[in-house]
Length: 211
Image (cartoon, rainbow, N blue to C red; front, side, top):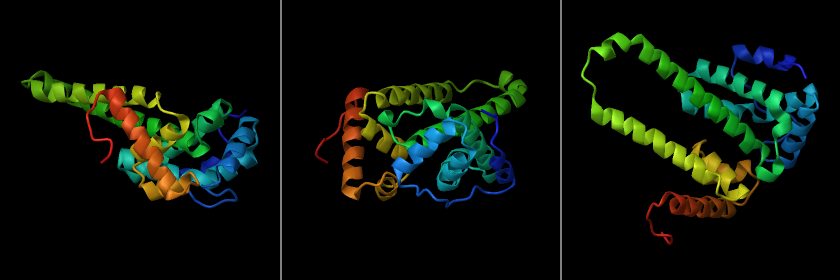
C-alpha cells in the first residue's frame, strides 16, 4: 500500500469536503469502505474521505482551535487511516467512531507538541520564576484524570463506548450522535446515559442514577 493516497493532496490547501456516495450515517457502507481501503482500494478511500472528512475536520478544529492546523490534523488522521485501515474491527465500534478516535488523538498530539514547544521557548523564564505549585498540581491531577477516563472507557460495551466517544471526545449533542450512528435519539440518549453511569462507577464518582 502506498504511503499517501493521491486524492488527499488537493485537500491540504482547503477545508475538507463533505458529500460523496456514502452517507455519514450508513455505518455498514463506511465499514465496507474501510475494509476495501485496507486492500489498497484508493477509490473506496476517496469515498470514505468525502463522506466523513467534514466531521473529522470539525472535531480537529474543536481540539486545536485553529483552521490551518485543523486541516493538517485532518490530513494526518486520514493518512494514518489509510496506513492502518486493516486494524479496523467493526465488532469494537463503528467506522465513524474509529475515525474520530484517530482524529482526536492526532489533535491532542498536535496540541501537546505546541505546548512542548512553548515550554522550550520559555524555559529560561521558567527557570528564573517561582514555580506555582498549585498550578503544577492541578495540571498533574487533570492529566491523571484523563488517563483514568480513557481506562474506564475500555470497560464499557462497544455500543456505549462509541456513543460516549462521540459525545465526550467529539462534543456532539445527543441528536447529532443519533444521526451519526443511525439510531433513534432515545436510543442514543440511553447508550450515553448508561455509559456515563458505568463510567461514574468505574471512576468512583457519586451521583444519582435516576437524575
